[in-house]
Amino acid sequence: MLIAEISPDDRLLHLQRASYAVEALLIGDDRIPPLHESLDDLLAAPLTWLGAIEEDRLLGAIAWEESPGELDIHRLVVDPSAFRRGIGRRLVEEVVRRAGGRPVVVSTGRDNVPARTLYERLGFLHKEDVEVIPGLWIARYRR
Image (cartoon, rainbow, N blue to C red):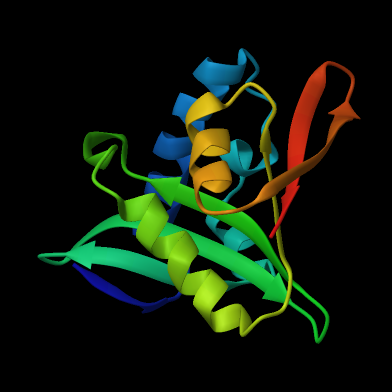
């Protein structure tokens, strides 16, 4: 599997929607903003993207913003047909490596147990739960 920089395109948009649809089921709420983004929204976001590519198929992607003081993971998406293959882990590990010792922060749905387990296994510490809109809770992590 190749981990490489990518740019937003229709393939990424489709992957993002499929991945966040699973999270919406896990947390019981489909108001996750990236689930409803358009390609123009993806292109306008000031994010750096890496993709996990196997045989020209995009199986996962991660996006972040960075500052001199920290790196903030904004998206981690994996094709539901490729769950439990270590793709998310490899993408997060690569971003942590690129952080060069800076703190890395990430948020996920409070009730998204698979994502929370992944971050905790990778050394992220739970900092707080926040209600971002009425009834929609996220868990914030820092490493």
